[in-house]
Length: 126
Image (cartoon, rainbow, N blue to C red; front, top):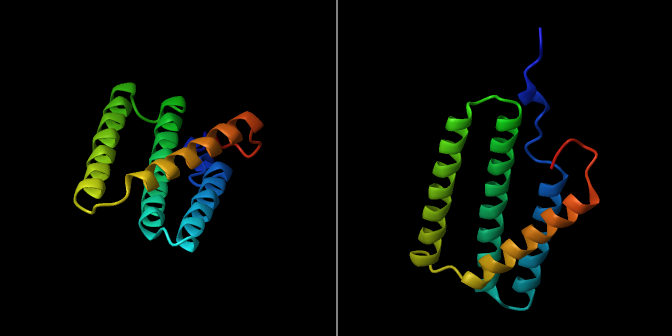
């Protein structure tokens, strides 16, 4: 009998570890130069975008392994997008987090994802 493919899926691979380290360094750097609002924005944005990346990776894996139907996966992508936008707007409008911190965190994570993608991973993750 075939073992479930989900057991091979790594939730927290090398790309996520490097992205978390980059976000931590960006947070520490902004905090040390006394830019506390930007540092909080970097931390919140970095964690939010990192969680979003992990969810996207899980959904793409579920399409490739045919764990869910394509329609259900597309529905889950839409729900994920609406939840992400809701959390993002809530943090920016009501919590008054710094938008520059979010942009800095997003840029750092995108650079890590592109760099790791160009380098290539051997551990079975993105």
